Image: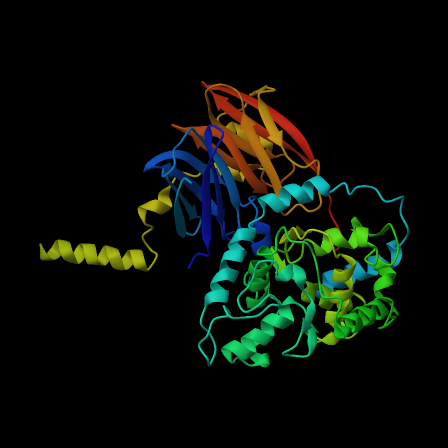
Length: 98
Length: 265
Length: 148
């Protein structure tokens, strides 16, 4: 149902760089004449523990791309990013730190 | 879509004027940052899936498609198009070659393939996804279209001729907008496309993700849309007309490093 | 036992019918802050009405955007103990664009793509040790052009 979601997590100079791409219309109130459709919540987990909670608005661009950073980290760490939109749809993706 | 095209074209007539001396685009930083931040990989991923997907009456994938470097060889293939292909006797660009492979390898009809060559934000077309994937495999390669075969020379000559060919309701040619230094439509700079210095960075970044419409765009689409803006007849997808223009622009960009897929306004 | 099974099955049917939202859909989202039409109101709803200006917040973004649909904005806070970052676009119809809470190993850093309706200040509010700090940066947005 939800379009492709992709993530890359790499170790870089003392921290873990996480880049996550998601497919979503992020349609605003204006664009939809009052029926906005957009991601509201983002959750980033490292090895099962929540490390980032994000609340976002319809002003995030269509097909959102986010970058996060984690202190330290090790190869093989499991990163999971999930999203939830205002219609109750969800999607998530997992990757191991390279 | 039509309305915006009309509005743009109308303003065109009023604002076509040589501007100040060519300066580095004020949008260079924006373009660099936005290209890095754009969701290009998502589309390339879908393109890869489509490349490998078994389709058509022959239930075959495109993995044996020859884009000029041998069946299935993708590294640098896009950067070396358009070129002459012996099996069709024509100079072909990426999209016409993809159509050819869909027909010959997958057994699909041209009508079915070109039912919807250009997509939109909600649903890019199959050809757009594939173009993004294939183009990515040429990132870093030198732009090197075919120039030695007689048919390639013919295509270049035809492209050059068409570039200044006046046509349509308003008697426009490509040169009306793209034939002189420093022209502008509203806030968009119009590149002089027969100047290698100006056309190279552009050819080096197609196909692209168009941020204003969240859609994928390719050179076949660009030509089609230009013809529309010029108020002349709609070109046939992958026709000699369009392919020779793409050849002309790509040969003018020869030697530049392909750095796409990119983003466009 | 039979009664309970029936109840559970009923709930499942209601869930499928979209009448009962699954627990996931009840995640916190600050509606008041995101519906605020001014930066001041949004910050009030976020609980950060008076944040002091700080050079410890770094906003990296293009000076001038060719189009407002995708404006890449990178934010870092060098203020020790930063646990949250909020990004606002002053002139947007609803200024609050995003808010992130950082825990454990997460660094107070984020890169987002925002929609900007016009030239505007981007305001970032960081919360560290119970105190609030802010910084702004103007991003010019070109409106009106003919694609590429």
